[in-house]
Image 1: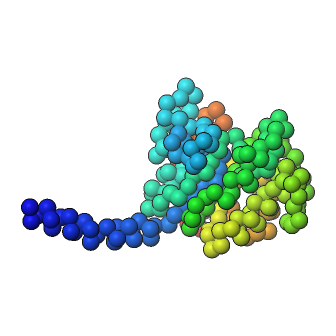
Image 2: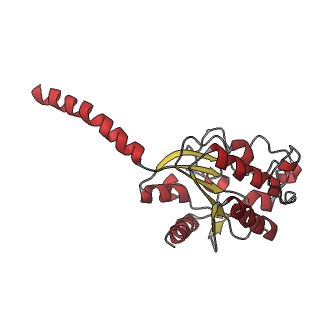
Image 3: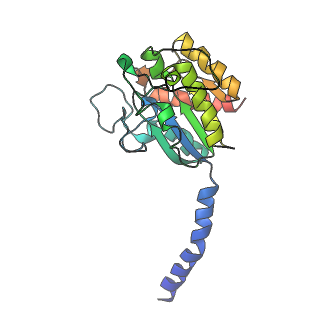
Length: 228
Protein backbone atom coordinates (compact mmCIF):
# COMPACT_ATOMS: atom_id res chain seq x y z
CA UNK A 1 0.00 0.00 0.00
CA UNK A 2 2.84 2.39 0.91
CA UNK A 3 4.41 1.75 -2.51
CA UNK A 4 1.12 2.54 -4.24
CA UNK A 5 0.72 5.77 -2.30
CA UNK A 6 4.33 6.75 -3.00
CA UNK A 7 3.88 6.00 -6.71
CA UNK A 8 0.73 8.12 -6.85
CA UNK A 9 2.36 11.04 -5.07
CA UNK A 10 5.41 10.83 -7.34
CA UNK A 11 3.18 10.91 -10.40
CA UNK A 12 1.35 13.96 -9.07
CA UNK A 13 4.65 15.73 -8.45
CA UNK A 14 6.06 14.88 -11.87
CA UNK A 15 2.98 15.71 -13.93
CA UNK A 16 3.67 19.49 -14.13
CA UNK A 17 7.28 18.81 -15.10
CA UNK A 18 6.25 16.41 -17.86
CA UNK A 19 3.70 18.90 -19.15
CA UNK A 20 6.32 21.66 -19.12
CA UNK A 21 8.73 19.53 -21.15
CA UNK A 22 6.02 18.74 -23.69
CA UNK A 23 5.17 22.41 -24.03
CA UNK A 24 8.83 23.35 -24.40
CA UNK A 25 9.07 21.39 -27.63
CA UNK A 26 8.60 23.49 -30.75
CA UNK A 27 5.00 23.39 -31.93
CA UNK A 28 4.45 22.98 -35.67
CA UNK A 29 1.36 23.61 -37.78
CA UNK A 30 0.82 22.72 -41.43
CA UNK A 31 -1.23 24.67 -43.96
CA UNK A 32 -1.43 22.41 -46.98
CA UNK A 33 -3.22 20.48 -49.67
CA UNK A 34 -3.40 16.77 -50.50
CA UNK A 35 0.37 16.32 -50.17
CA UNK A 36 0.07 16.93 -46.42
CA UNK A 37 -3.12 15.00 -45.68
CA UNK A 38 -3.57 11.62 -44.06
CA UNK A 39 -6.61 9.83 -42.73
CA UNK A 40 -7.38 10.88 -39.16
CA UNK A 41 -4.56 13.44 -39.08
CA UNK A 42 -6.10 16.66 -40.43
CA UNK A 43 -7.92 19.42 -38.60
CA UNK A 44 -10.77 19.90 -38.89
CA UNK A 45 -11.58 16.27 -39.69
CA UNK A 46 -14.10 17.36 -42.31
CA UNK A 47 -11.26 18.40 -44.64
CA UNK A 48 -10.93 16.27 -47.78
CA UNK A 49 -7.94 13.92 -47.73
CA UNK A 50 -5.95 12.00 -50.34
CA UNK A 51 -3.83 9.59 -48.29
CA UNK A 52 -5.67 6.74 -46.57
CA UNK A 53 -4.62 3.80 -44.39
CA UNK A 54 -6.26 1.49 -46.89
CA UNK A 55 -6.57 2.63 -50.46
CA UNK A 56 -6.94 1.15 -53.93
CA UNK A 57 -4.51 3.75 -55.24
CA UNK A 58 -1.09 2.63 -56.40
CA UNK A 59 0.62 5.09 -54.07
CA UNK A 60 2.59 3.28 -51.34
CA UNK A 61 2.02 5.76 -48.48
CA UNK A 62 -0.39 3.95 -46.14
CA UNK A 63 0.81 5.03 -42.70
CA UNK A 64 0.91 8.48 -41.14
CA UNK A 65 4.56 8.04 -40.18
CA UNK A 66 5.42 7.82 -43.88
CA UNK A 67 4.29 11.40 -44.55
CA UNK A 68 6.84 14.19 -44.82
CA UNK A 69 5.43 16.23 -41.95
CA UNK A 70 5.19 13.27 -39.56
CA UNK A 71 8.76 12.25 -40.33
CA UNK A 72 10.07 15.79 -39.88
CA UNK A 73 8.25 16.44 -36.62
CA UNK A 74 9.23 13.07 -35.15
CA UNK A 75 12.87 13.30 -36.23
CA UNK A 76 13.28 16.78 -34.76
CA UNK A 77 11.37 16.16 -31.54
CA UNK A 78 8.75 18.77 -32.39
CA UNK A 79 5.06 18.53 -31.52
CA UNK A 80 2.14 18.92 -33.92
CA UNK A 81 -0.28 21.77 -33.27
CA UNK A 82 -2.65 21.55 -36.23
CA UNK A 83 -2.41 20.04 -39.68
CA UNK A 84 -4.97 22.08 -41.59
CA UNK A 85 -4.54 20.47 -45.00
CA UNK A 86 -7.32 20.05 -47.54
CA UNK A 87 -6.99 17.87 -50.63
CA UNK A 88 -7.41 19.72 -53.91
CA UNK A 89 -7.30 23.15 -52.31
CA UNK A 90 -5.86 26.23 -53.98
CA UNK A 91 -4.21 29.24 -52.38
CA UNK A 92 -6.65 31.58 -54.09
CA UNK A 93 -10.43 31.29 -54.12
CA UNK A 94 -10.57 29.93 -57.68
CA UNK A 95 -10.52 26.16 -57.96
CA UNK A 96 -10.72 23.52 -60.63
CA UNK A 97 -13.04 24.23 -63.57
CA UNK A 98 -13.26 27.80 -62.30
CA UNK A 99 -15.28 26.75 -59.26
CA UNK A 100 -15.52 28.93 -56.16
CA UNK A 101 -13.19 27.52 -53.47
CA UNK A 102 -13.79 30.11 -50.76
CA UNK A 103 -14.80 27.24 -48.45
CA UNK A 104 -11.43 25.47 -48.74
CA UNK A 105 -8.78 27.84 -50.10
CA UNK A 106 -5.59 28.46 -48.16
CA UNK A 107 -6.71 32.00 -47.38
CA UNK A 108 -9.95 30.61 -45.93
CA UNK A 109 -8.01 28.30 -43.57
CA UNK A 110 -4.93 30.37 -42.71
CA UNK A 111 -6.18 31.57 -39.32
CA UNK A 112 -7.08 28.10 -38.08
CA UNK A 113 -3.63 26.77 -37.19
CA UNK A 114 -3.62 26.93 -33.41
CA UNK A 115 -0.70 28.52 -31.57
CA UNK A 116 2.43 27.16 -33.26
CA UNK A 117 6.05 28.24 -33.10
CA UNK A 118 6.62 27.23 -36.73
CA UNK A 119 4.27 27.06 -39.72
CA UNK A 120 4.96 25.17 -42.92
CA UNK A 121 2.89 26.30 -45.89
CA UNK A 122 2.92 23.72 -48.68
CA UNK A 123 0.71 25.11 -51.43
CA UNK A 124 0.38 26.33 -54.99
CA UNK A 125 0.28 22.89 -56.58
CA UNK A 126 -3.44 22.97 -57.30
CA UNK A 127 -3.30 26.60 -58.41
CA UNK A 128 -0.81 25.47 -61.04
CA UNK A 129 -2.66 22.29 -62.02
CA UNK A 130 -6.04 24.05 -62.16
CA UNK A 131 -4.56 26.90 -64.21
CA UNK A 132 -6.18 29.52 -62.00
CA UNK A 133 -5.89 33.20 -63.01
CA UNK A 134 -2.48 34.49 -61.95
CA UNK A 135 -3.36 38.18 -61.72
CA UNK A 136 -0.92 40.99 -60.99
CA UNK A 137 1.48 41.50 -58.11
CA UNK A 138 -0.48 43.38 -55.48
CA UNK A 139 0.62 44.05 -51.91
CA UNK A 140 -2.25 46.06 -50.46
CA UNK A 141 -5.88 47.14 -50.87
CA UNK A 142 -7.11 43.67 -51.86
CA UNK A 143 -10.73 43.31 -52.88
CA UNK A 144 -12.84 40.17 -52.77
CA UNK A 145 -12.43 39.86 -56.54
CA UNK A 146 -8.64 40.16 -56.29
CA UNK A 147 -8.49 37.05 -54.12
CA UNK A 148 -9.69 34.86 -56.98
CA UNK A 149 -6.25 35.41 -58.55
CA UNK A 150 -3.09 33.64 -57.39
CA UNK A 151 -0.65 36.54 -56.94
CA UNK A 152 -2.94 38.85 -54.95
CA UNK A 153 -4.23 35.93 -52.89
CA UNK A 154 -0.75 34.73 -51.97
CA UNK A 155 0.36 38.24 -51.02
CA UNK A 156 -2.78 38.73 -48.95
CA UNK A 157 -2.22 35.38 -47.22
CA UNK A 158 1.41 35.99 -46.29
CA UNK A 159 0.72 39.56 -45.18
CA UNK A 160 -2.21 38.41 -43.04
CA UNK A 161 -0.33 35.49 -41.50
CA UNK A 162 2.62 37.67 -40.50
CA UNK A 163 0.18 39.92 -38.63
CA UNK A 164 -1.92 37.09 -37.17
CA UNK A 165 1.05 34.98 -36.00
CA UNK A 166 3.58 37.54 -34.69
CA UNK A 167 6.94 36.02 -33.85
CA UNK A 168 6.07 32.72 -35.50
CA UNK A 169 8.50 31.32 -38.07
CA UNK A 170 6.81 30.75 -41.44
CA UNK A 171 8.36 28.58 -44.15
CA UNK A 172 6.88 28.08 -47.61
CA UNK A 173 7.50 24.80 -49.45
CA UNK A 174 7.35 25.12 -53.24
CA UNK A 175 6.59 21.96 -55.19
CA UNK A 176 8.65 21.17 -58.26
CA UNK A 177 7.29 20.98 -61.82
CA UNK A 178 4.73 23.75 -61.31
CA UNK A 179 4.05 26.42 -63.90
CA UNK A 180 6.69 29.13 -64.19
CA UNK A 181 4.10 31.74 -63.25
CA UNK A 182 3.22 30.02 -59.98
CA UNK A 183 6.80 29.09 -59.09
CA UNK A 184 8.42 32.45 -59.79
CA UNK A 185 5.51 34.45 -58.39
CA UNK A 186 5.72 32.49 -55.14
CA UNK A 187 9.44 33.24 -54.78
CA UNK A 188 8.93 36.93 -55.57
CA UNK A 189 6.10 37.33 -53.07
CA UNK A 190 7.92 35.36 -50.36
CA UNK A 191 10.94 37.61 -50.85
CA UNK A 192 8.73 40.69 -50.56
CA UNK A 193 7.49 39.57 -47.12
CA UNK A 194 10.75 38.06 -45.94
CA UNK A 195 9.30 34.55 -45.88
CA UNK A 196 11.81 31.72 -46.16
CA UNK A 197 11.02 29.22 -48.91
CA UNK A 198 12.26 25.81 -49.96
CA UNK A 199 12.23 24.89 -53.66
CA UNK A 200 11.79 21.14 -54.04
CA UNK A 201 13.44 19.20 -56.86
CA UNK A 202 12.93 15.74 -58.33
CA UNK A 203 10.33 14.46 -55.86
CA UNK A 204 9.29 10.88 -56.63
CA UNK A 205 5.55 10.61 -57.23
CA UNK A 206 2.90 7.97 -57.85
CA UNK A 207 -0.39 9.21 -59.29
CA UNK A 208 0.89 12.78 -59.03
CA UNK A 209 1.51 12.57 -55.28
CA UNK A 210 4.67 11.89 -53.28
CA UNK A 211 5.41 8.20 -52.85
CA UNK A 212 7.07 6.90 -49.67
CA UNK A 213 10.38 7.66 -51.37
CA UNK A 214 9.14 11.12 -52.34
CA UNK A 215 8.06 11.88 -48.78
CA UNK A 216 11.54 11.11 -47.54
CA UNK A 217 13.03 13.25 -50.32
CA UNK A 218 10.93 16.19 -49.10
CA UNK A 219 12.25 15.74 -45.56
CA UNK A 220 15.82 15.42 -46.83
CA UNK A 221 15.50 18.62 -48.84
CA UNK A 222 14.04 20.55 -45.89
CA UNK A 223 16.92 19.30 -43.72
CA UNK A 224 19.47 20.25 -46.38
CA UNK A 225 17.95 23.72 -46.65
CA UNK A 226 17.99 24.26 -42.90
CA UNK A 227 21.58 23.05 -42.64
CA UNK A 228 22.90 25.74 -44.98
